[in-house]
Length: 161
Image: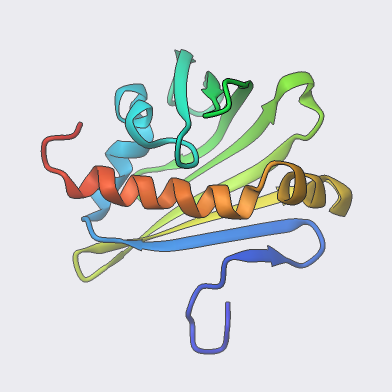
């Protein structure tokens, strides 16, 4: 964060990525978009990606197993294990992918701000090399920004789950 309190997207320290966006929806609606497989299917992932959920168990110790389908036709297996859930403000998880080449810990916070919600994705990697790999090879910063943009679009439409 800058001294002004404005969120800055990008790398933080030598093992972290932080991405933040002010979403034009109340925190309860944003929370719901994160906590059901049905809603996640509409917005999770960068622009052009879709997902197929294999299993979704939203509880501490539960797993979300899914495939991200890239616009280039490539599939990216993913898994998330929920490690902390504080409704409606915080959820922590471990996140891995195909062959578990990189596993990271993520903290998602939802801060209520005058009827809107500041969503912050804070990812911590085991090493700087792992962090740099996902930034360079997977476009993690741009992908995270696009994902939060899709979330904003999703929750702004009252027809969406």
